[in-house]
Amino acid sequence: MAKATRDAAPPIAQPPHPVLEQYYASERERPLRVNEMFDAAAAEYDRVENAMSLGTGKRYRRQALARAGLGAGMHVLDVGCGTGIVTQEAARLVGAHGSVVAIDPSSGMLAQAQQRAVALAVQGVGERLPFADASFDVVCMGYALRHVADLNAAFSEFRRVLRPRGFALLLEITAPQSRFEHALLKLYMKRIVPAISRISRNGRAASRLMSYYWETVENCVPPLTIIDALRRAGFEQVERKVEIGVFSTYRAVSVGSR
Image 1: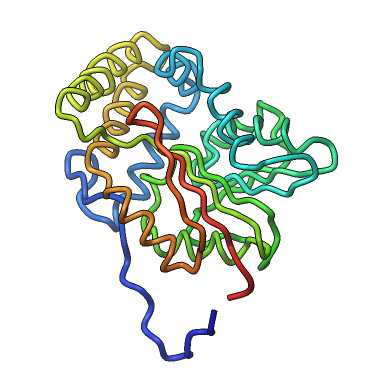
Image 2: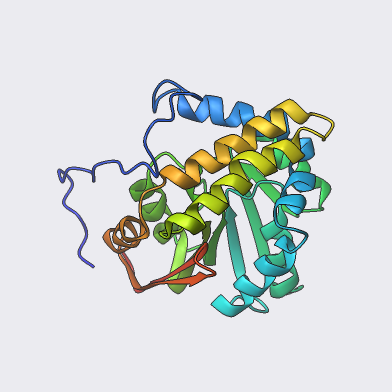
């Protein structure tokens, strides 16, 4: 892929969803307000997530990572690691001869990740990764794509830190196209999960975060926009697989140098 000329205009920012005014007033304000929500709910996040996934979350993540090709000896970056659920499952797959580095903008979520004995957890964002070029075999992101500010910037950074033939793996929840299935998922994620969340110790914060979570799912850009953004960043062999119409797995390969 030819290098861009020095005076080439940067790609237009592609947020994953429009401004959600009930939570923040502008794109500029969004990172601060979203981090505040995650920080406030961090201590309860795993309990709520476990209830939301009916206890299957860890197993599903491990299986998705393994199916994508994560294996022994690989060096992995988990972007938007949250409490470290994906990080922990990736570490089990890469074993003692591999490594997993975790990064997240929320100090509260990172504190929870470190309680899982995550070896290296760094505070930062996917759009500005503090790592050298070609540092990792895999960059993964579990259900955090909706929380970045700019898909184009994030995917460009993912590719930069990947080694040739390395791959990016994105796990996401996608709102179903069927009106009936969409209504069911909305009822579950917007009403039932926040109601369950209120039972937790910091119930108000957890409930608010889960309500926000659904809004990001419902308003997220369509899968084709995500695929196009990956290709614009220089990824090849971009593919998306869907399970039960809701769980999307995107895999994209970094071929050669930028």
